[in-house]
Image (tube, rainbow, N blue to C red; front, side, top):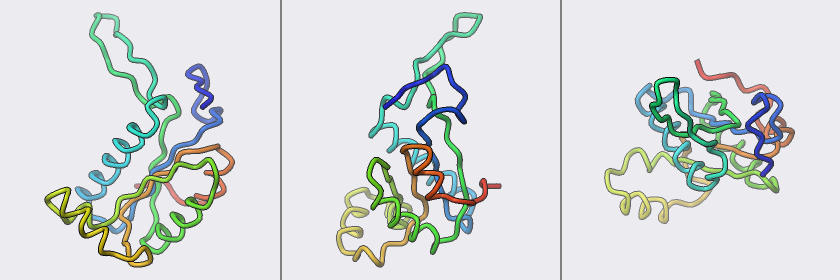
Length: 146
């Protein structure tokens, strides 16, 4: 990964997007985006820049140096996008199946997921991290979440 904390996020060679189902209620939408960020941070710890101190000396943890755009799509577009992204070399795909937001026990979520055929999984969000040109081609003209 070409870590460049001295460049604008628009100049970075790496792009990170989270695409959420725009039909979700606000609480589930924010939950999905937060969970995507946690998973991406675990998979790509180098995406988080160093922390820093403010002028008063208080420490602030590092944040993603590449930035992250949160985009909106409908459920069908999410499914199609996930399929295309999974086929792209060099693009990390992190997804949140609907079962992750309905199960209250993580093991129950894993059981629900294991019992669901791939074509029947409903996604509430996906996150893509990869080369800017590849991610741009995948997300096309999806709008920013409003």
